[in-house]
Structures are given as structure tokens and as C-alpha cells.
Image 1 (spheres, one colour):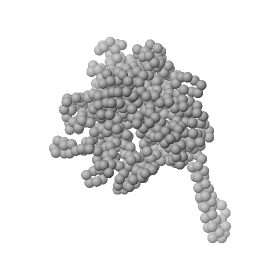
Image 2 (cartoon, helix red, strand yellow):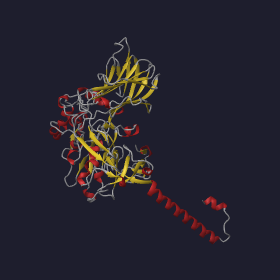
Image 3 (cartoon, one colour):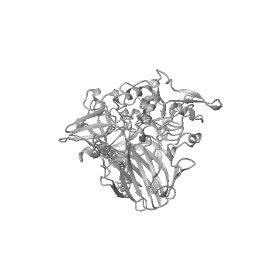
Image 4 (cartoon, one colour):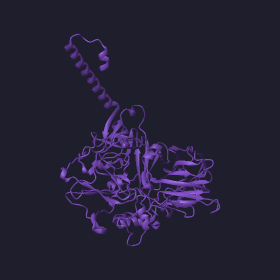
Amino acid sequence: MNKANISTPQPVIESAGFVHSIREYAEALGVALVLAFLFKAFIIEAYSIPTGSMASTLMGRHKDVFCEACGFPFQLGASKESNEGSENPKPADYLPQIVAGTCPQCQYTMYVGQTPDGRASRASYSGDRIFVNKSIFNFREPSRWHVTVFRYPARPQINYIKRLVGVENETLLLRNGDVFVRKEGTDEFKIQRKPLRAMLAMLRPVDDNDYVLPSLHKLGWKTRWYGDEQSWNTANDYKSFAGHHSAKDAPADETAWLRFRNIIPSSAEWNNLMQGKLPDNGETGTPLLVTDFVAYNSQWTYEPEFGMPHEIHALDLAGGEKKIVCPKNPAGFGLNWVGDLTLSCLLHVEQASGTAVFRLIKGGIAFQCEIDLASGKASFSIPGVPEFVPFSADTPVKKTGKYRMMFCNIDEEMRLIVNGKETDTAGKGEYDVYCRPGTLLARDRPPTALDLEPAAVGIRNTQVKVEHIKIQRDLYYISCDEMTSRRCDLEKPPFRHDFSYGEESIRKVLSSPDRWQDFGKTQETFFELGKGQFLMLGDNSAESKDSRLWTVDRIPYYVDRKFLIGEAVFVYWPHGFRIPGTRLALIPNPSKMRWID
């Protein structure tokens, strides 16, 4: 505008030109404010996330933590440290403080409370700030799996954010962590699969081998990944594996396996391992089932009125050093078995012949993808289940080189992603039609001992290197309709009984196949939706006041269309970095700015 004014003939009276410029600036400012108001009111509006009901997809107030044992980065919920959104705010001196939390990678519980001089050892940051598209529902209907902002029906002046999971004119069922839907006028419930981007956004960490701890394994503690010694060599840092298999060493059709076992040290075992010794009982690692544990919910809280939890105490280390140690918080345990997993890695193909195999176990059944390294043909199968018809698909994995591989068994479908692009299987990887009661793939089948080693990479007649291996699990929706059942889907003893006794009893259940008969026979929750009614669930299922629990406020479990505001699209301001010497987190953090899926 200034350049245009310069080129436009000006009045000869200077004072009149000054008044004219002031008026132009005022008019421009007025137009900008009106446009900003219209933009905010009708198109895009900014919101902040106060709580952790959508963690880890979206962060409420939290602590960013690097595990002091393995270095894995994770977040701990810290909403309790703030009065934001509270109906009964407390004085600052009486607010709880987060003092410990458990790493999702190595399951070490670390102290994050005050240092001896009274300073906070880990800062708490406000939640993500996001842009919300408020006009989207003028152009299309609300969609399943989209993160949606709406007015809470009990108090419409308050905005909530959840994932839209149930749409109008259907009956929705939550069972074994999955979502099933029966459309109006039909009798059959069908599993609801997530689009690729939503599926990836909803995955949660189980194991990332880049954060393995060599010092533990040199003590004699078992590794999570182990291979057939004749065919697999483990690197000195335990982070990569070289595989070589030939007909000279073994039968040509025999697969040499590199297997994953879900070994998690207990709190007592960690106390010994941190002192550089194996546990007193000589244990070297017990595999457990994969569960719906979420690190964000694992925090210990210091209540000024009640003091520090007595479980947190000082441990004498060698040389007279003292260390504050913290057991796992039983209230944060994941108690639900999760069989929907993904296996990803960087695969170095060093010999463009033979076969690479990816395998995932669920309920004692193997789901398998075999890749012919000469042709790139991927073959999918469920060995031992004759009803499932094996099929093939083309991939680019057909010459020497590096390939980013991800094999998924999610929502009763096998999927393969190579170098970030999903392989086109034309829906042939779906196997829900074979999951009828009484069959090998029945949904109520429990896990078996095979589920203690739920993932593997195999080779036949080839040479490869495998690194950057990750195991992730699907988000698990707990089936509940009241506050008391928010943690566990299991209805019968010994689970309800044993899970109430703390860490050791929980570990005993999760490591003992003879106790698992009821793991598939879990609670079911039904939600019937009429016209203009939608069901909202939080991604942090164990800590989300969502549609399942609204009857506590004496309101229906659905959101009427009139209360829908829009869809969350982008995190424009994750917490920033603090200006040195201040508490102001104003330095931008672009690495965590992201689209919301």
C-alpha cells in the first residue's frame, strides 16, 4: 500500500496528506480486523489443548522427557499441575506436581521432581496449539477417524476435542480394542479400518531397537531381539543384525529367524540393573504380553496436602552415592492385551535373490509376508488357516539396496508399506470374514505362548542387514461405560483379582499363558446413533472423558450435529523452547509442527 501511495499524486497541502495517510492506515487496519474476525468466525480458528485425552496424538500440558536409562524421548501428562479448565481451582501452592514417570521403551521409571535445591528438574509445558477448520462441514459430512472439535453437550460453552469414531444412523460396538459397526437396516457388525494416515498417527511404541542398552546385555540380561546363531550376527552395539543363509548351511526351505520377545524389567530388577548387577534371584529377563500401556499416564504425583508417595525412596549406590528410585505406578499399567502390531525396519538387501520374511503373531496365529528379492513379489499368507487364500502383490524390493519396510497386522488386515508407500493389495489382506466364532481366527481366541515373541524377521537363501527395527501397537479402545471400568476390559477373575495387587501380580498374569483363557472374552459396549448423532472417543482411551463416560453428567453418549465446530488440521505451535534464564517458552519448535491425522 505504501508503494502505491508514493506513486499516486498527493495533495499539495502537507497537513491534508498526513490526515489522508492516517485515514488510509485506519481503513486498512479496520478491513484487516474485519477479515481476521470473519476468518476466525467462519474458516480457521486457533485452539489450545489443555488436557491429555488425545495423547499422544495431541499433547495437553505435559513434561518432555528423555529417559535417563535408554535416552528414549517421551511425554508425561502434567495437566494436574495447572488450574486451566478446572471448575474448582486450587491455590498455586496446593497444586499437585508430577514427580516420576515410566519410559515406554525400556520401562524404567525415572524421577522428574524437584532437585535438592528446590528447582524443577523437568519443566512442564502448555499443550499443543492447533488450527481448526470451521467451514469443513459446510462442504462434506463429518467423517470417521477425523480429529474433531465440538461443544460439550453438558456445558456447550466448553469446547472438547476427540476423534470422531461413530457416525449417524449406525450402531457401534467396542470389543477387544477395535471398533465394529452395524449399519441401519443390517444385522452384521463389521470392523472399521483406519485410513493409512490415521492408522500411522494412532500407533503407539512397544520397542525401538535404536535405544537398546548394551550395558545391560553385557551383564547377561537377555536381549529383546535374538537370532539363530548360525545365520544371524548381532552388532557390538546390539542395534543391527547381519543375516546370511544358504542351502550349504541349512535346508533351502528352512527360514532363519530373528525374533522379538517383549522383555520388560520389573521395578525391582531395574534397581539391580542400575547398580550394574543382575537381579538377586538370577533372573535375566521375562517376556510379557504387549499391552495398552501409555507412558503419558504413568506419572507419580506429589500432593502438597499428602506428601510424596511412600514408594519413591533413595537407593544407596556404589561409592556412597544416593539415587532416588521410583517403582512403576500400578495405576498407569496397561492391562489389556494388544495383538494388533506393526514391524518396521531398514532392510539392506545385499544379495538380490532368496526371500525375506516378515511375521507378526496374534492369538497364536502367524500373519506373514514373504518377499522374493529377485522379482519383488510379496506373498501374504496365514499359515495353518486354510480358509485364507494367499495372494501376491508387486513391490520395488527387487535389487540390492536399502528399503524402509513396515508390515502391519491392524484391524484384521495385513498391509505392507515400502519406502513410505503402501503396497496395493486390492483389499486381499482383509481377513475379517474368517473371524467367525469357533474358527481358528475367532475374535475371542486368547493369546498363546507364541504371543510372548510376537514379531520376527526371517531369511532364506540370501544375505541382508537389518537395523532401525521398531515394534508398534494399535490404539486400544477400552470398552467401558462407567468410571470404574476405565482400565481393563477383562470381566472375570483372575484378572480383576490379580490386577489389584500391584506390579508383581500383574507381571505374573502377563507372563503366564495358563492364565490367558479369558483374554479374548472381554467386555462389549454398544452405542446406537440416530440421525445427526456422532460418537467421540479420545486417543488416550484410559484417560479420556469421552462419549463412553458422559452418562456421569446425565447426558447422552452422542454429540448432536449442532454442537460440531470443525476438524483439527495443524499443530502450529507445539510448546516452544524456553528463552535461557526465563520460564518463557517462546523459541519456535518447528520439528513438532505437524498435520493432524
